[in-house]
Length: 63
Image (tube, rainbow, N blue to C red; front, side):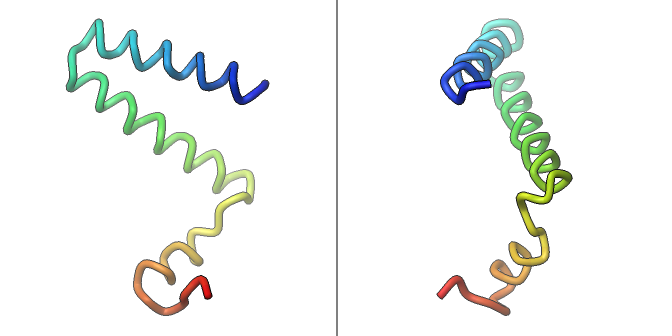
């Protein structure tokens, strides 16, 4: 899928959550979508969690 189509679809889903469930539902759905995207990237090998952990704990820097 093209990024524009994906963005439009995600916008529609978040708009539905906001209208149907208010601000709390909107924020909860946005959080779950972000977690799902992160899990998918980790499963696909696009994100290395060890590198993120090391950067957050100060063991390694990006430079």
